[in-house]
Each structure stands twice: as C-alpha cells, then as structure tokens.
Length: 79
Image 1 (cartoon, helix red, strand yellow):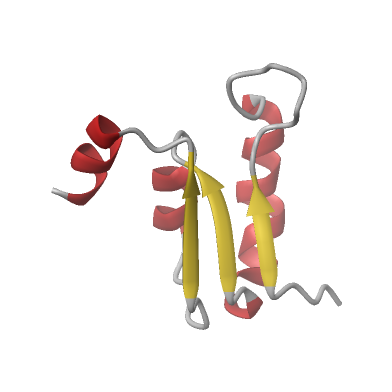
Image 2: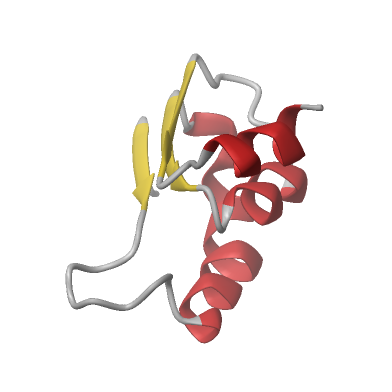
C-alpha cells in the first residue's frame, strides 16, 4: 500500500526546464491512478498542472501549490 498525503511533482535541481516526459508519463499512467484518492496536498509545476489535474479526481485534495507560474500562464489556466 502507498500512503501519500502530500505530493510534490517538480523538476529536479539540475537545470532542466521540466520533468522528462518519460518520468511524467509513467507517474501519470502507473502511480497517480493508484494514489489519487489519498492526496490531500499537491505541489506541481505549472508546465505539468493541466496533465496532472485532468488525469483524475482528487477527492481529498485540500491544497494546491503551483510553481513556476507566470502571470500569462495563470491567465491561460484560470480564464
């Protein structure tokens, strides 16, 4: 069993602009479907937010923190 209340999905500190697609693909297809209902807090980069939020319903989600969010990106996401 995987117990996850707080989940952070951000790029590594190695200068890459975002998570590699292969890593994000595996996470979205294999891991999130198994733990989505347990997540209470989610920290996500703006480049991955749509993919992660549209994947499933996070029924216990109480908080969301977005990283690397420009005003232009916020406008695109929320309007």
